[in-house]
Length: 216
Ligand code: DX5
Ligand code: ZN
Image (cartoon, rainbow, N blue to C red; front, side):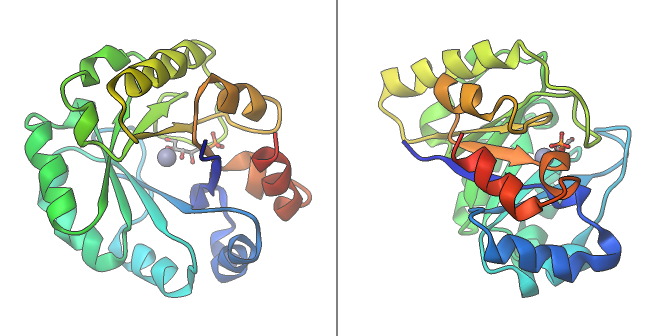
């Protein structure tokens, strides 16, 4: 089973962003995780297109872009042009999710759907075969450095069973409060991709932290 790690640049040192991107390039990490917040869907703002374009110029690994924004349909093509490889929208932000997913794929990106902590995985039953990835939010989205919500484990297990029962290849990504203390448990529950912000960039040795999480 695929076991990836995607460091979240939200916790990087933006005064030394080039250095932190190069650290991820040289590490065992698989993807860059980019958090886009609009101050409406979540009570925080992060960064936009110019920053994503600059990251794309230096990054030597796929950009996994997590949109925490309302009405994401307006910007799908802009994110493709900015360099996104995997584009994830929130279930709670999309009225016509099937159309949004089809458009992400038509633009040549992999399509993901993210669920807030209160949203049950069972709501994905119809759309699951169309998804390249499901992102389980294990904190309420908006900020790095929050504590992992334990109920997320049972959501991962239930989603793993749904995916396996349907025989799909959909990846399960987990985001929020992930680190060496719970990475093994998450992979065991059926997760494929672990996002880690603070656990990587606030560690004494970020490169080593990536290695530890990935081999958990
Ligand atoms: C939170 C973001 C996360 C965040 C994770 O809304 O989606 O990607 O950067 O940060 P940590 O790993 O510190 O919880
Ligand atoms: Zn994220």
